[in-house]
Image (cartoon, rainbow, N blue to C red; front, side, top):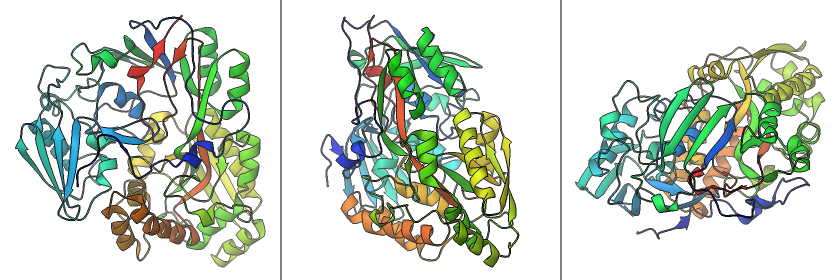
Length: 513
């Protein structure tokens, strides 16, 4: 079945998602700013970020690295900021053999930053490399065979029906690296892709990119480059925009009024991330479902949403926000989830009548430390004495990736590259973020059903069943609230939209004045 040139990934973001969970202040619908004056196509966008890139090698990159990767690389399938699937390095795709085969028609006339040609062999080289080692091994575990049928066509064969792979190929697994750079030891710091920009300089605290003159779609690129400077503290990032050191940055909901008062343009909208606690279920106590259920009932999500996020982080006991196809409607009412007495009873039944101790690891960002402190106070009320351990940015990434942690308080990406991958990574044995080996009977079959088709009408029922089963039996990831993405720009910067699934398109930003 041939895909149209542009289609939404199975109604990836329902209209309701753009309207849910947004507070007062700015428009509830994600928008871009407007400004007078002609854009300066040579201007450099200065974007303030919370941390350095982990790696420009897709095999070693961390979940929040797309803000850097999307500047230099392109994907086989393109995904807009709003989540619309369309042509990328592949212009067309066809399913066959009950969705076990995807045939990709490749874009012609594309060059890598080092002058190499983009073609079928380049696609095969990247996919084979990603399958062998690194962060994408589990993502591509069902990819059985890669055949180059011509320089402009590649045939992918999977071990099972894999309609969901179209979304996966719009993520890091769909990045194509120049074949000559794949095995280069400096790929983590010197990426070679086909994107609108190529790396210029990289140093601690700052990375800059310059426009790639050989870009196949250079006419659509509206700025001369991008410069990203690290400010780990949210207050400092906003101050950088206010002082003119930066053109824009992501901010917290609590900073919206301050940004608007200083004349900045603010965009906001829900995305497929949530704030929560990732548990290592191999740790004594956390291996007990009743302890995990107790944690679910010990958290006053509505209080956290109101007092820490002004309602812009929507209280949730599930990974997906209302309006997203993987969201379970029956779980949206969280009014009865906070039940301290039930939490105490569950702890006693689990063998902890006098409570227990817990270490909460958290990164350097102020907002997550504040969340950890709020959770610490609430857990104390049911007898869970928590110690907060602050880790550096890279330490936090390493801890989560290696499984050397007890419970991390952090942002969790549940929709990228596809919600079924979240299930695979967090709920299934061998998952990248399941160091304790959490598992639940029946999930394998449900996951296979949720992945077979690219039509969410067919995928929704098994996905909903997975989320309900895991939630009811004590999940290894405790959701607190669904995040609303917020960013602020100085006057004259337009063209960047809310990255609903974590896809950034800096090349279409316009800067005037």
